[in-house]
Length: 167
Image (tube, rainbow, N blue to C red):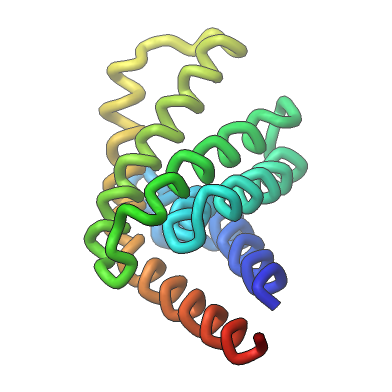
């Protein structure tokens, strides 16, 4: 049940990000829902599940949108592993800590993605890209992460209670 619900959440985030997110786009900036969900699942469940969810979500992103297979999978898995490392260090009930980690790791993801683009496609002007795309994307993603984290937190608590009742 846990795997199914996690897969549905990630697929829903991916579908919403690739189809309906133009509606809530501000300027040319859209929140990165898939990476946000990876970060928040990793914070709630740990680096192991965060890495697996990141890898699977990245593979889906590579299949659907990637130019080079494995780029998104590697980045998303890395973000899941890194953010999941803070699983035991945060108060899961406090959505502000989740927002802070979302901001940090969305920035890490976008910077790593830009560095990857620089080496593969030769895109330059890092400071311009950081100020015009990376930072606004991280801020926008952080702002909308609070209600999404609260929903994921409740789903996670329900799944944990269900697993504890089962065993």
